Image (tube, rainbow, N blue to C red; front, top):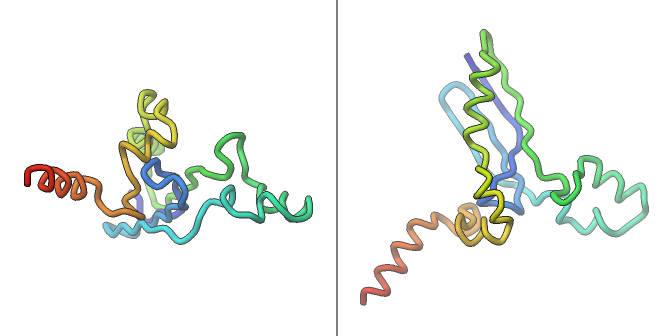
Length: 128
């Protein structure tokens, strides 16, 4: 049983923002509070030691964007949790779209709200 989990996530629909992920019991909270370090000026300008500190978790092409979640509980089934998390990943076709394709097809719900609502409103406008 997972009792608590927390960490940060990189989501395709909110590529530029760190997603904060927290669960306790049956309560889930997801929000964003900051941009990834790769998008901050301090990662690119300043002394070598200052840049190195900001780039500590960088991986080629994506910078510090990543999933980092801790699960706390008892009698947890690692493979069951892993299987559920793997289902959340983009499939190969979705991944091939890249950042621009993700933004075009998935939008950014943290910045722009629910895209389905927006498309419904657009369809209503077109019908007028």
